[in-house]
Figure 1 (cartoon, rainbow, N blue to C red):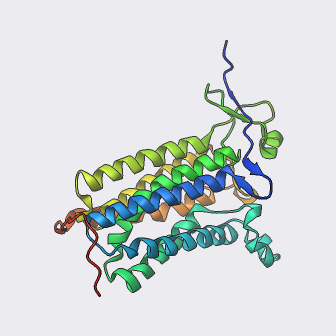
Figure 2 (cartoon, helix red, strand yellow):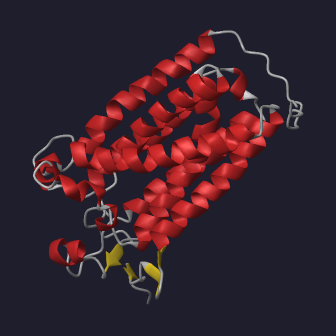
Length: 282
């Protein structure tokens, strides 16, 4: 008879020699590589300058890391980091917040739109968030490999026992817990599939804000509900009716609703699809 739980005993480190490679970092890198190529495919389809892709990658790469780190610092552990500011740079010790990363990306896209595309930022948001959904799913798989960000105890047959996690050993010794990393990853992958179909099959990029709004509702709406069965990230959340992740998700969901209504009430924008890079000007 098969056990009614899964013992998760995966080493989070792939290589630990003269260099250290962890599953989390690998998932992050794979996500950025795939994302770069998918964005390039969409940009090429619409005939925009090829160098926009690499410029956007730099903006988003920096914004994601800086924003996610500062989000964790200010939203979750400001009491600690205000007393140990030099620790803010110690990203290898852990501590990234997806809401902070989202805010960082929003700022980066606005700057990218001002200085590079000279277009409405919604044009970039609609295309970029498609691949961000995919990257988000891969990052949650990285969390799974790290045996972190899991949920409450469960007797469901797909419950996990994260035997390498000190947090699990302290809170749930011998008990299976919800693999909330998998729940979120599957949600993000499904959202990516939906948005990819919306862009390629329904030409939803012609309704500025529709794809971005779909992303915000799908990502942060699912995050809001998963948080009910996820362990608090920091101690001060223990007695909160809604934890910090849920409180931070609400304005993103409301923004998503507004964007979808905005997009559907405006006339469809005509876009040509030459499916080639424009010729460079000498």
